[in-house]
Length: 167
Image 1 (spheres, rainbow, N blue to C red):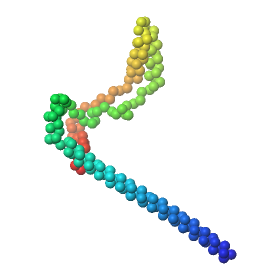
Image 2: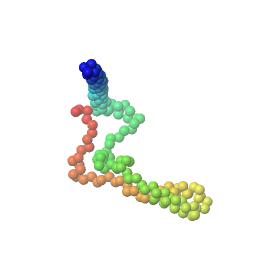
Image 3: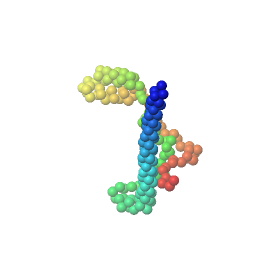
């Protein structure tokens, strides 16, 4: 009985040692990965700092003025008028925000327009049918055109944030 109990304890101790070694090995691998990620983060931060410094040098007003004078004949640059500037709120909505038109209605309208165009067309039927279908698709379900919001005096206080080199 004592020998069986000793063998069971030896097996449990061996299994425990194996599990402990496996956990230790995994922890060391994770620690190496953490060090590698910290090194990558430091490299990215250094790269960002370098790019900010480069941007500060590239966007110096006296340098830009020299370049404008040097390439003025080729570029024909003009000063931006104050009326050409808009607020971000006045820009039309993003393409991803535009509502999706109903495809089934557009197809049915295009088919009706094509049939009507084919009946009324005589000589130029082959040429006008696709044009009529395109026009019908465009007018089938008129989506509202996004219009910029009018500038209000309260909105003038809002400033468009631009990137700054100094932080």
